[in-house]
Length: 512
Image 1 (spheres, rainbow, N blue to C red):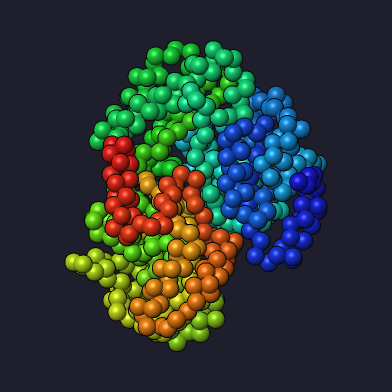
Image 2: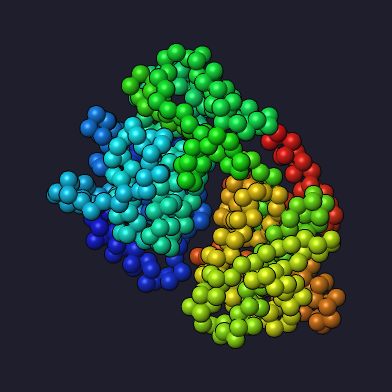
């Protein structure tokens, strides 16, 4: 593990990696140090999904108010470095305030979030806080130029603001939102928890318990904000030592206050236990469940997913057909498939629709039915080259996510559960041994009349594809941390389908 304190060294280190490995994927975890299991969960995920992991430790003076705990904020650097080394971090960046801000802290170019994102929750009580956060995060993103940034959902408002900043400034960076990690008591991990006495820690558990009461009201079928908030207030009243700062129900992306949860809501709270300020939240989703199925090539994902969709009456989000539709349009327009700018221009201006019709899923692109056309040999021969282009993937993932807003879909791929639908109610990782997948592939080829191909050659091809799929910088094959793995060796399609359907019903019953 390397440790750098200057911008020059940090950039030099990363530039060397980029020159040696053009496909290097850089994951970035920004922290203020005093690392706890919540931070370590971000680092762990970054380690799985990237070739280089950078952790910054920087206590940002711009985000602290005059009466806040800048001087008292814990700075156990040696302990943090030890934790980073154990987590296999590649490089820790610990610049001084002068290195990042210069000598004149008061006259900085600042990044100010949209007013609607900072007019609720923590914004009114911490003026200047979020501009301080975005200014420093923007500096770090420019220095490190990561592919992915890992942020915890506990700081939900900060997550929404940074995501909006990255979108508005057109930075090619993926913001990865990670689950809140909690102590056994339910208290969300925070660097400020160490300020609490054992008695205060016990008192603080009412925050999550109260949010849970609000969620119970929501899950019972009542989406009215007034009823949800009343349930939270009632539970908070059982612990008089808690001084409530705010309790609000807002849209998690726009921060707009909600009177009714139509699709999704963020139930957020801030309170003080003695002098320690704590925040927490839960997400309320009003949608049909989403089922994400990932796994390596040849594991039977496509066939299983179609059958699951049909038996559960879910929309089969045929991502392969979407890539085929784009390929057909590129060919139809006479665009050279290697002309990536022209392809990018085209795909970002097209609209794909999936329409179930009796036993068939019809595919439309720009209002034209291309269900039959996308299965042509010409499309088949060119779809891989089109699907490999980052601009195509970026555009289609956004269209795929749009289908997830109301739920009721099942999709399969390499990173459906980790990227496209990270909040899917049920995630399945369908796999099989290389030997099993090779035997299946050999049988398929024989049935297609493609002659005898040695099993050994097929095994080599599949192993090579597994390596490429799991190491690619764009859409790598990943098993989500909360995915259920199903090993399909020796199982029929019907048996796998039956097991997934059983898991789906178990999961959806638990959710209600």
